[in-house]
Image (cartoon, rainbow, N blue to C red; front, side, top):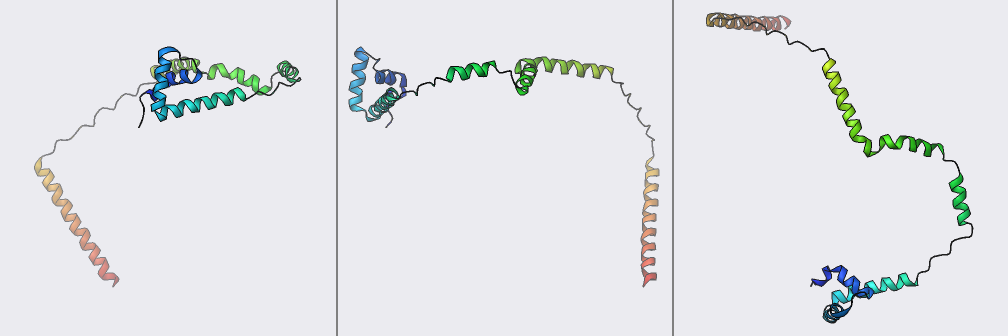
Length: 158
């Protein structure tokens, strides 16, 4: 079962470090006697603090300061100089300015571009229904003639 106090990590952390005092500390201590999840969380935190207290940083070598100052005194490499040169234009601070410049250039090109005049519409001839019927009859006659010519060619090949 999840405990509602376990979600109050700051309060448990303050108790683990010994910074929680008074009635709050006493109430939390009584809660820890009942709740195994909170008791385990506090024990884990105390284990971490003990491990951190036991850890000792290795001593800094006597040459450390000399190496740092030697590195500072070295002239920057060509890559560092190039990066410093290109960094401001490539940073995000210049992005709005670059976008505005592109917008102005696009507007200038659009305004200077020669406008293409639309072609006038092709006049449509008005046809009468009799002409359409006559054209369809001719197309049907040519189709039957074409079919007859093909069958005649197929017979002559045999």
